[in-house]
Length: 139
Ligand SMILES: [Zn+2]
View (cartoon, rainbow, N blue to C red):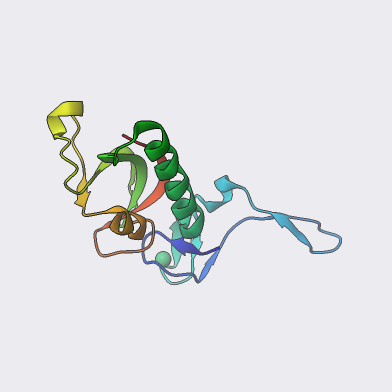
């Protein structure tokens, strides 16, 4: 598990947890607890993301897409968190030169990556100004 601040990439963060107050034992934290929690480095509330969990979902969706479509996907439909703190919901990221024209779907993609490895790296803190925080499906 690697949970980071989507603004600065720091792991110096805190979030709400469900715990047994008698023992202090942490039971779990919910997906909602990653939204608008605090980063000590930004010194403010921000959205956190579980990088490994997002990458895992990406791989599962990819295998599933390849299994049922017998081709490489042309786009990832996903949610992103931008460095300015704005959430991008239902955005598309184009994947390499798959031969699928934007006109096919009438899609405006926010970014074009060269392959699945680069796409996966976008789930982590990166230089492109946004991080993928939720993978919806491949197209
Ligand atoms: Zn931060």
